[in-house]
Each structure stands twice: as C-alpha cells, then as structure tokens.
Amino acid sequence: MSDPLIKIEGIAKRFAGRDGAGMTVFEDVHLTVEQGEFVCLIGHSGCGKTTILNILAGLEPSSDGYVFVGGREIRGPSLDRAVIFQSHALMPWLTVAGNIAFAVKSRWPEWDAARVREHCQKYIDLVNLTGAEKKRPAELSGGMKQRVGIARALAIQPKMLLMDEPFSALDALTRGMLQEEVLRICAETHQTVFMITHDVDEAILLADKIVLMTNGPQAQIAEIVVNTLPRSRSRHTVHKEPHYYPIRNHLVDFLVTRSRQFRDERPADYDPKNPPLVTPGKDEPPPAASSGPVRHEKVVNLRH
Amino acid sequence: MKGLQIWGAPLLSIAILLAFLAAWHAATRQEAGAQVVDAEYAKLVGKEAASGKKSAFPTPADVGKKIWGHITDPFYDKGPNDKGIGIQLAYSIARVLAGYLLAALVAIPLGFLIGMSPLVYRAFDPFIQVLKPISPLAWMPLALFTLQDSGVSAIFVIFICSMWPMLINTAFGVAAVRKEWLNVAKTLEVGPVRKAFRVILPAAAPTIMTGMRISIGIAWLVIVAAEMLVGGTGIGYFVWNEWNNLSIANIISGILAIGLVGMVLDLTLARMTKLVTFPE
Image (cartoon, rainbow over all chains, first blue to last red; front, side, top):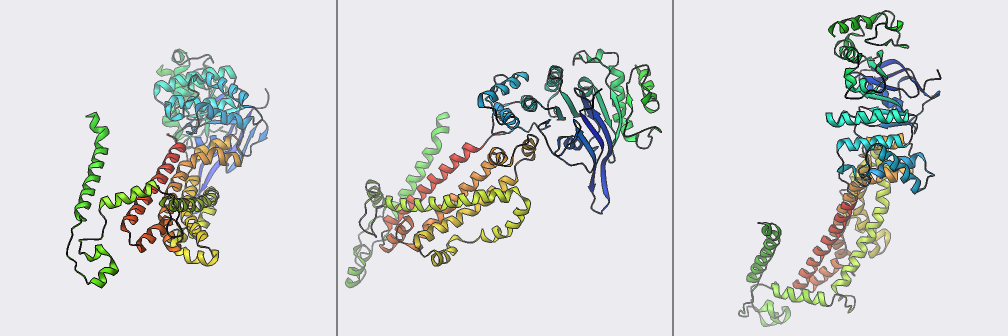
C-alpha cells in the first residue's frame, strides 16, 4: 500500500488556564487516512472534534504533534483541503454561481470567465442545483445552502474534503437526501473525506472507518471501527445488512458508556499510536482488538 | 379598507399641514391698528412695526409668495448680498460634497486598517474617542488661522465632522466580518487584496454605508452653522443675511430649502445603503 494521504502524529490541543495550569482538550492523537477513504470522527461535544478538523484544515495550530498531507507537513490552510462548514458559510452578497465561482477563481486565477462558468455549472449540476444558479443564499432552503457548500468545496477538486457536522443543522428528511448524495458523489469522484459527526447512523452509512474519541478533557482516540458493510449501501437498505446492528450497537455503547470510562479502564495493550481496529459482528476479530472491545461485541451479539 | 391603507397616511399628512397653515394664518392675521409709537420712530422702523399690528411675522401667504419668487427665479445674481436661493444652495452643497468626499477618502481606508487589526484598533481608539465629541465649529478658529481662507475652512469643518461616523462604522464593520467568511477565504488561499475587496468590503458595506449616511446628515447640519460664521455665500449665509435684512419670509424659505435638501441627501444615501445590503 502506498503512503497514506493524511498522517496525524501525536497532535494535542492545550489551553493556558487562568491559574497557569493548562487545560488539555485532547492529546496523543494519531490517525492515518488513506487515499479515497471516507473517515468519520465520532465523539461527544468537548472532545475537540472540531479542533482536530480545524487543525487539519490549517485554520488552527496544534499545541503539539504534526500533520502530514501527501508526505508534507501542513503549514496553514491550503486549496488541497476543502472545508464544508456546519453553518454552510456562503457569502450572502453572491449568487449560488458567484459563491462557487469565487472558489474556482481562487483555485485557477488564470482561467477566463467562460471556463470558470462552465466548471461551476458542472458542480452545480452535480449537487442537483441546476436552475438555482442566479439565486442568493437567502432565497435557498437550508439543504440547498449546504448543497452549494458541497459544490463549492468539490469544485476546487481538493485532495481531501473536510466536513464539520455538515448536516446537523438540517431536518431529518433533507439530511437523509444529502447523505445519499454525498455517498453518490464520493463513489463517483473517489474523494477522500474526513467528516465529523455525532450521528451514529450517518457514520455507518457514509464511512469506511469510524474513529471513536473518548470524552474530553484529555480526549484520545479509543478505537477505530472498520465498517464492514458493502460500499454500495443505501439509506433504505443499510439496516438490513447483517453487520448493521452489531456495528450500530457497538457505536452507541461506546458513546453512552465507554467514551466516559475509557480512561480508567484502558486496555493493557492500548497504544495511542496504533488504536485498535475493531470489526463488530465479524466472528473473528482482528488481533489488534483482542482484549477490550471483543467483550462488548459478545454482549451486543447476544442482544441480536 | 385598501384605499385607506394607501391614502390614509398622505391624507392625514395634508390635513396636518393645512391645520398648521390655518393656525399660522390665524395667528398672523393683518389687523390695522392705531399707530402706537412716535412718528419719528415709526419712520425708522417701518410701517408694519409702527402700526401696532399684532406681529411682524409674515402670514403663510407672504411666505408662499416669497417661495414662489425663489422657485421661479432661483439663480439670479445681483451682487454679493443678493443672490438667488439656488445659487446659495449650490454653494453649500458643493462645500458639503467636497468636505464629505475628502473625509470618505480618508476615513474608509483608515477605518479598514483600524478594523483589520485589534492592536491598531486599540491604539487609535483614545484619539477617536477624544476627537469625536468635539463640536465641528470649535475647529473653525483653528482652521481659519491655519488655512487662512474662509471657504477652505468651511470645507475643513465638514471634513472633520463627516470623518468620525464613517471611520468608526468602517472599523466596526470590518472588525465584525463573520469569522466563517474569513475562514472560507483562508481555506481558499485568497490573497490579502482580493480578500479585502471581495470578502471584507462587501461584508462590511452595509455598516460603512450607514456611517456615510450619518455623516452626510451631520455635514448638512454643520454647513449651515459654518456658513453663518464665515459668511460670503451659501444657504447658511443666506439665512443670516436675511436675518440682518429682517426678512422673516426669506428666512422661512431658507429654512424650508435646508430641510428639503437635507432630506434628499439622506434619501440618496439610504437608497445607496439598500443597494449594498444583502438579506441573510
């Protein structure tokens, strides 16, 4: 296998407290993301999910550790890493096409107007916004705004897409539709994605790997769940897959109890540089996940 | 009901105006009275004051006649002390625009710099806080001394008073640009100049325009007072000159013209603010 696209090595975020004693949000976070992989990060609020994404985006410095993209250490934001913001962050004085064109012109300043327009149109069509090009963000629904955000991010053809709870502000129906569309677009473009979510079902539907973070402060990556469901899953059939409930229960279990207890009941062979990979529901768990997680899966399996 | 919604307010406005004119007319009605003063004095002060009439205040009809005269012949020029009201207004508007545009040229770029950096913001803040509340006319003697020209001094006074609302609003608008838009610009690796013109300027434009609207209002208030002081030309001088002529009807015409021009200036800026305002 070639080198991973993203390599996070021991990053941490600390804030100086008022009395001089610092506060550590998370530390010793190691993670790799392969080319074409869809990785979801799940954790409770306060574990520094958004901070990790901002560090990846280059919007925030980490207090410790390094992040490498394509073998190079990142220094600040880059057009290689497009961000889809939770609040869509569209510029209200520009039209849909204008917002996307702003990004395209930033990426390829030498392009002429016709080429920019054609390129924008391609991505407007991709996110099913054809016909809404001339509208201002204020005239769009929440779901349509987020579509523009997705089109803007994809239009600059980034190596990596960073999504910060992109669908959390949307109603359930719109969210489902957009998830399906992201699934389709990622399958078409083989886009590498790093997404933050607190929605277990969203993670199972979209992600190849689901990274579980313990509660902050001093949050860490507890384990990485490998999604064993076939990649051609859809929102309507995903719950019929044999491994769906084991995975889902494992995640819910983690969020409800283990994310809190993890620090006290850390498995003896836990290595933050190499968090255990687990495959809930598979009969033979990989050796890396031999101690802690297995116990839980058995419980889960009994229930189903 | 729909007709009332559309025509109710204008009809009421007209009714208020008519009631006001009627009250004015009743209060200033000509009543021939006996001569109450000495004949010598009567010759000095003129017929009306001597005849014991209730007031030398003109009736609405007198003022109406004067205003009609000004409207039909606004641009006559019969020497330094007798120019048409149109010429006087043009002088005032030219001064206001000159001072105002100069102020905009200084205040908006400076406000941009101040708003971009919290450090510069804090450094400039004490100066702005001290200079802002100074009455523009307090600058007049200093301006007259240093600039040595009454016309230029009037423009300077407009400049200095238009400055602060524009400066403060620009700095505030620039400093308050939403972080998410700046983050978008950052992740797109947008250069500083492009960021200033394509992100910060449109985002801050409504706030800047509000400052410009406040400024033009203040400038128009101040020019009248400034022209009363420096004299020569302008609508402020016109009003003061008519006070010296004791022509109350002309003073009222002048006051009305000041109000109308001020309204037009304000409406123009309001319209421009609307153009750059975006709904969210």
